Length: 108
Ligand SMILES: [Zn+2]
Image (cartoon, rainbow, N blue to C red):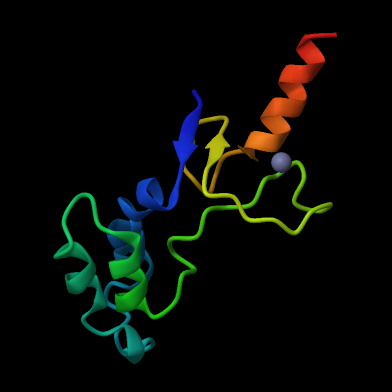
């Protein structure tokens, strides 16, 4: 399966992922106190900007780097594609430029 990955699609899973990582650990991470509830209150299709305001950085909503060309180029994309469908962070991620390159190979 191929999944389109954007800040918006990533945003949908932040509350659950954040809860998984920090629930019951308020004594270890006091600066995250109350954030799980605030993230859940944003609903099923939260705005990534609202998530970043609650968490305090963009690390949970950032579009992942291309697994193929990230070493050569320091470039961020608004959209990438996840090739195995295993989730935004467990899959092989490929950018539009690399997809265009592969498509070009099929034309030769
Ligand atoms: Zn790429």
